[in-house]
Image 1 (cartoon, rainbow, N blue to C red):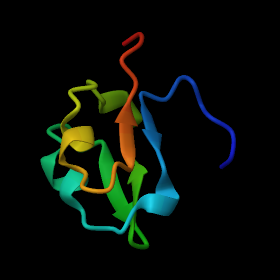
Image 2 (cartoon, helix red, strand yellow; image 1 turned 180 degrees about the vertical axis):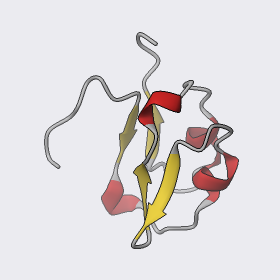
Image 3 (tube, rainbow, N blue to C red; image 1 turned 30 degrees about the vertical axis):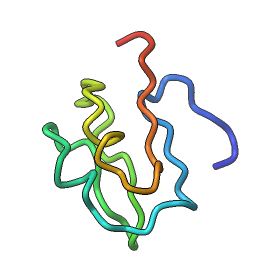
Length: 69
């Protein structure tokens, strides 16, 4: 998972995730899920890049790319 996927609307630093689940709860489209205590993108096609996950994360795990939609 060292390579970046530039088509992905979110950058996730999985090693920083402590599994609090706030990003999952606040995502209005159900894009994120917890898997074995870490956040993962489950429904990438539903992401609208609203930024709520980035804003709510206390550990700066998620960064929303503001490029093309």
